[in-house]
Length: 115
Length: 111
Image (cartoon, rainbow over all chains, first blue to last red; front, side):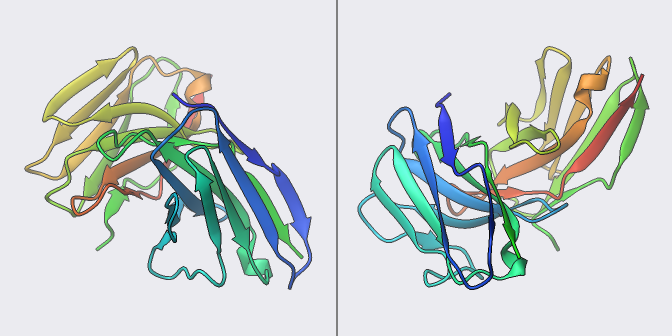
């Protein structure tokens, strides 16, 4: 499976600010996803990061709040904008080799605390 | 109805026993099913995938799938303290390639 890294691994931010999380994969992958895991909860898909086009957002998530970039097949960023304490979560990227290989592998996650 | 439901935990089993985890799903067209293990403070790690009805064994883990009943389970045989974690059931949606996750079942193996 691919080796996935995320930066930063954790951060503490003030409300009203923004944080950009990076996800880097050691090989080209077709599919990249961003998830949120709130304390004690399961994973919720935020969006699919599409290379060369706008991300596809799940219901309840919007581009203005969670802008996503995917400049190539190995890298993506998620920005959490205008943060509030409710945004305190673990943010995870995951990858799948292609749409026919539906197995997803997760990065180590970014633990975000908003004060 | 939630897309993926797991038996509520936490589940506590003695070392050496079998831990049984259950998962039901609502999308009758789903064809791909996964079990992830998540240690506290870590990201989910894939431990099993299953696509066909029946059993699939990998070491001490056995996944069981019954599409007619929309049911998938995970058995952990000879449970070890290192198996103490939250186990997440994931189901691929039939209308796209994305995964829906259950809430997870926390397993504690008592030494």
